[in-house]
Amino acid sequence: MPLLKFRVYWEEDDNIYRDIVLKTGQTFHTFHEAILTAFEFDNKHKASFFSSNDNWSRGREISSDVLVNKKDAPALSMIKTPVSALVEKPDEKFVYTYDPAKRWTFLVELIGIEKEEDSKKEYPLCTKKEGVAPAQTGIKGLANERLMEIEEKYDLSREDMSEGYGNEGDDDGTPGDSFGGGDDDGAGEDY
View 1 (cartoon, helix red, strand yellow):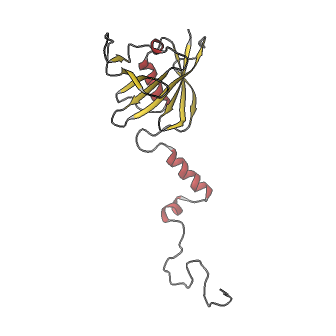
View 2 (view 1 turned 180 degrees about the vertical axis):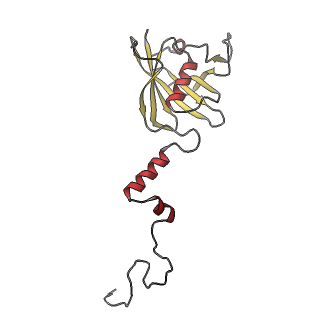
View 3 (view 1 turned 90 degrees about the vertical axis):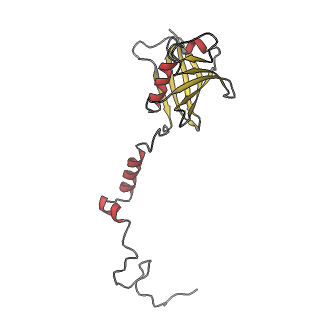
C-alpha cells in the first residue's frame, strides 16, 4: 500500500515543522491526531483541514464537527474522509487549523509518495521533527533547562540564585565605591 509523506509547518515559523507519513487509506481524523502528537498538543479542541492551493487559500473544509459526509455539504467529515481521496497532485496542500479560540494554523504539504510501507512500522509515523514546537499553553519545559544552564555556567547555588548576584551596594558601613575600589583619594587620576 503506498504511503503519503506530508510536511506540516507551523504558520508562524516555517523553520518549525514535522514530517508525517500516512497510509493511503488513513483518514483526516488519524492525520489530525498525528499532528497533535507530533507538536505535543492536547486533543480537546475543534479542528479542520482545508484543501488549498499554492497561495495557501482555503478551499473545501474537512471538519472534526461533521460526522457523516453528505452530497454537496459545505464540509466533509474528518472521521469518514481518507486523506488519499483528496490528493489529486504530487504537491497537494492543505491548511490545518486547531482550537478556533487560539487559531493555531499549520500549513500541510505533500512532499513525497513512497511505494511500499515498512511492515515493522506503525502508521501514521512522524519521521522528522525540526525546531521546538510552539507551547500550546504557557511555557514549554525549556525554562527549567535554561535555568540549569545558567546555574552551571556561573556556578551558582540555589542560595545564590535566591539572594541575587552579590552584595555590592549593601550599606554595611565599609568604605568603598560601587565598583569595589576602596578609599578614593583622587590620586593618580588624569582626565
